[in-house]
Image (tube, rainbow, N blue to C red; front, side, top):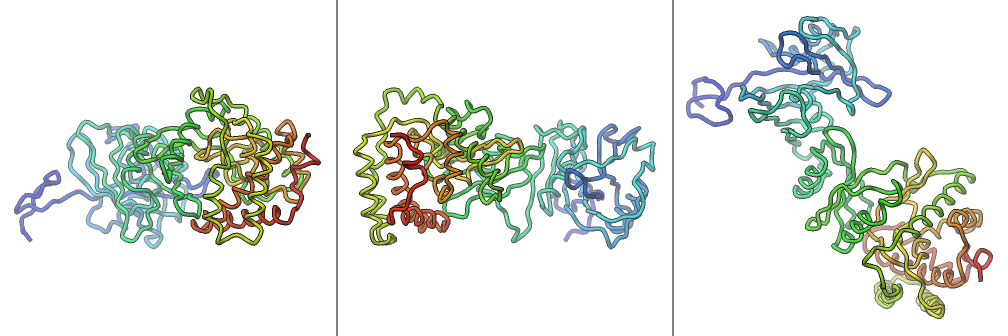
Length: 482
């Protein structure tokens, strides 16, 4: 190594010169608040750098350890007494200020225990001190500090934050220089770089990716959180067909339902990816409800289905021939035959033949996968939907197939659902519903086995068992019209 010590060189190595930088420390004092974790920030004032901007208590390291430095700066600026043993490493940020200033390294430390009450100790440098939710940081704020807090929230141990010369000192979500570096072996739930870049072009820098995919093959969905607040969902479709269906629905009939579903933010057909808004509500999948609550929910689901089915047909559908829902019967049976029980195939063929005697039903706009895991219950009692990658023009009973399983032995829920839908089913619709359930069950058993989705397999087997044993279907005869 060279022995000479010289000034910083802006990231270029110069023979005989070591790269030296100032070192500073930042306090991330965290407490629990009504909206989640809160952080202590102070507003700089007077004849100081970044006057008028919010910043974490901080300062330069002198001839001491970085831990001793943050303990000292905390006392000098806030009056809080911190035990060095309570100081926890949070993130290291390699930073370059705007204006071509000298690079520096900042050590951000988390502290959750202290003695005393925070107060403004240096009024010539600070005119306010407050607690802010980590999810609602104040503006204007020093961009350097904001970068450290964003990296801390994302769980990155190291971050780079190099300003361009003409960048503002204050945080600007449209001038975001933060680059996160994750540690070795750290779980990174996010997608490949191309999808990340697509999503960040749509909503700005993303500080957290949470994998919320279903536990089956080819499900790729993430909930993301933006650096400036807000959350969205990023989805990569397993094939071009699903991508086309979902984007067509999100651009077509979904907006007409007034917030009952997600809004499309961006789509990239090359990546087969979309960014959509989050929908308010909790998933009905696995939700425990009282009998009265169940009735209200299924009536709301029926009303939602009616609204979807009443959506205007796309202009390209004018004159479209009726959909043939049974064209793929042989393919489904071939794929599932080794997995079927004796008598299943015969029952499926019989159900399809009975439906075909009525002739085709008129196609309408359908959700395509209307089941509880794609339905959310809002705080206002409204039911909303997600996931329209299977949406297409189909007979309306296609949307009843996967909700039907919840009606076994529950005529009260059937009554509530049809009350919300606004009418009973006709005899033709009943016959086509049985045939659709039969084919969906065969397909589900085959696909669920291949994709490792036991819930889908079990639902298919239950439906086939009811069909095989001749059990009463709750929609029929007592509910249906001639």
